Amino acid sequence: MALFDVFDIAGSAMGAEAVRLNVTASNLANAQSVGPDEKGTYHARHPIFSAVMQSLQGGENHSVGVKVDGIVESQAPLEKRHQPGHPLANEDGFVFLPNVNMVDEMSNMISASRSYQSNVEVLNTSKQMMMATLRLGQ
Amino acid sequence: MAINFDKALGNLPEHLSLYGQRSSLLASNIANADTPGFKARDIDFQSIMSKASGARMSMATTQAGHIGGADAAIGGMELLYRMPTQTSLDGNTVNTQVEQAQFTENAVRYQSTLTFLGGKFSSLKMAITGK
Figure (cartoon, each protein chain N blue to C red):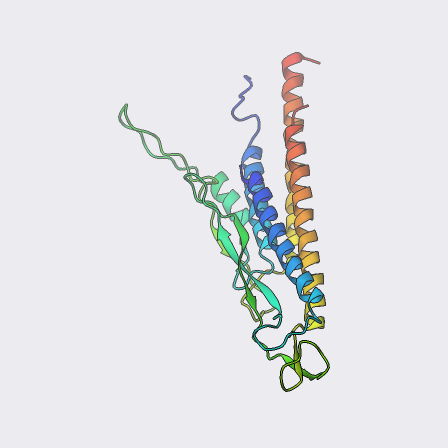
């Protein structure tokens, strides 16, 4: 029954948005984690979403869920700061700051939370529709 | 006049099934609101229902072993792409607000169809029990 698909679809979207929220949290948490070189410093991470077709037995099915294809690290250049007294500073006295853009991350966080709420709303409405169907004829 | 249980409900069951399928379609659109390159899809309810209730054609059965083909009612629903009102850089055409409005409308229509069906059932019950 098509209404049952809604639970899978909205559930997959909620999972994907939760991953996005997690990644944003880790970006914000590590915004000040300095490192001694480009490689050893935290890079901002972002999830890649893709649609996943759910094939049902037999007939054509049009329900499309979401999955997280992977998480990529931002390739934006890191900021160098001259701090010779820092224990992680390199021989020239520089430490590297992560390329986390606070504004990007905050807007990403709001967007993820709104999308999550939309999907919860879809789930609730579908549940009410199914409960009403169960009460049919009473 | 005999009560015909097959026709008593009209095409309300078909409506209900189509609304159910459309809800999963709109849920897909909302779920993929952040997926790059995803194209929002929907069905044309009117054309499907007119096709289903219009010329009902079924295959002729001239031999005992023939199976009369079921008329193309709900099964072959044609998926259309939604026309985007605004382009986005990642190729996604989902407008969450539009999809939410459509989903809510679809849910209300589903509920009203259920109410009509409930009315049909209570009429049948009244006809059977006489009270």
